[in-house]
Amino acid sequence: MGGLGVGWKLHNGGRPPAPGAVVAPDERLSWGRTVGLGAQHVVAMFGASFVAPVLMGLNPNLAIMMSGIATMLFLLWTRGTIPSYLGNSLSFVGAAATIRAQGGDTAEITGALLVTGAVLAGCGFAVKALGARIVHTVLPPVVTGAVVMLIGFNLAPVTAGTYWPQDQWVALATMAATGLFLVALRGFWSRIAIFLGLLFGYLLSWILDRSLGRIHSPDGSGQTTTHWRLDLSAVSHAAWIGLPHFHAPAFDASAILVALPVVIALIAENTGHVKAVSEMTGADLDPRMGDAIAADGVATVISTAVGGGATTTYAENIGVMAATRVYSTAAYWAAACFALLFGLCPKFGAIVAAIPGGVLGGITVVLYGMIGLLGAQIWIRNRVDLTNPVNLIPCAAGIIIGAGGVSLHITKNFTLSGIALGTIVTLTGYHTLRALAPAHLREAAGAGPATPDPQPRDS
Image (cartoon, rainbow, N blue to C red):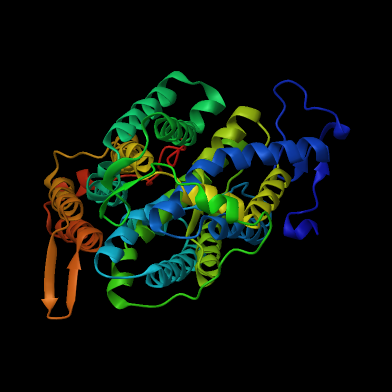
C-alpha cells in the first residue's frame, strides 16, 4: 500500500507533534487528530468549492461529492507525494456564463469542461515526458498572467447584469462585509472570508424578509417579480440522505472553444501549487509536475462525465498546511471522505441552492475581481516588463477582447469571442512578436517560471 501513498508512518508515536515539528506527507498523526485536520481542510476548501457550482448552475451536492472522489484519485495518482485537495474550479465560471448566454444548457457546460479536462490531462502527460520546463517555454508568466486576468474580468457583466440587480442593498452590504472579513480577520478565518461573507448575506436576507417583507426586483431568470429574498421552501422537502442527480454531458463545438482557454489557467494553478508544496516540504517535486497536471485533468473528466464540476488544486489548503506544518496526505483522505458525505445530503444542496441573488452579487464583485487580479500578481512575482511592446501589445489586446466580449465571426455558424479569442490573441501574439522582435526586445521579453502566489485564490 505504501506504493500508492497510503502506508503512512505514525508521527511521534501518535503523540502531538513537538513545537515546530514538520509532519511529512508520508506520515500521519493519530487518527483522531487526522480526522480533525481533515475537517479543517474541508472548511478551508468549502466556501469556494460550493460557490463555484452554484455560479455555474451545477448541482452543488454532486460537485462537492465528486471533489472528494477527485482528491482521492489525485492522491493515488501522485503516490501521496503532493498533499492537495481538488476542489471545484472557479476559473470556468466565465466560460459557463458565456455558454449559457449563447443558448447552451448545463449538459453542454459539463461537456465543454470534460473536453478541457481531457486536454489538461494530455498536457500533463506531455509535461511528464518532456519535463517541467516545457510549461515555462510555451506558457511564460506574461501569457498566463494575461489569460488569468481576462478570465476574471470577463465575469464582470455576470455580476452587473444578473446578480447585483436582484437586491442591490444586500449586495452592497455583503460586498462590504466580505471586504472587512478579508482585511480584519487573521489566520485561518481570513482564508474563509468569502464563505463568512456569504453567511453574512444569507442571514441579512433572512432578517430583511422577516422585518421588511418581500422585495420587488428581478429574480434569477431576469423577470421582475415580488418574491422572498431567501426562499427556503425547498429545504423542508429535501431528504437528509440521498444520491445527487447525475446527468450525462453533451458536446457542442462552440461551447468547447469557450472553455478550452481555461487550460492555461489550470496549468498555471497546478504549477504554482506544486512549487509551493515543494518549497514548504523541501522536496524536489518538479518530476511530479506532469503527474499533478494529468491527475487534475483525469479527475475533471471523471467528475464532469456524471454532471459534476471541473477540479483544480486548492491554494486555500496550502494555507492550512503552512499554518499547521502538517503535510500528511492522510488528512486529505479524511477531507475527501467528508466531502463524499456532504454530497449524499440533499438537504445541504437545497440550502446552498437557496442562496439569494443579491448575496451572490456582493460575493462575486469581490471574487471575480480577485480572480482577475491574480493575473497581475503573476506578472509582479515574475517581474514581467510591460514597457516592452512584445509583452504589452498581446496582453493589452487579449485582455480587452476577453473582458469586453469582442467577437470575430469566422463563418456564418462559427464565431470566436471573449475568453477564447482573447486567449488566442495573447498566446499567438506573444510568440509571434517575440520571434519577429529585435534581439534586445526578444531577450527582455523572456521570463522565468509562471508561478502564481500560493495564497488563497478562491476564498
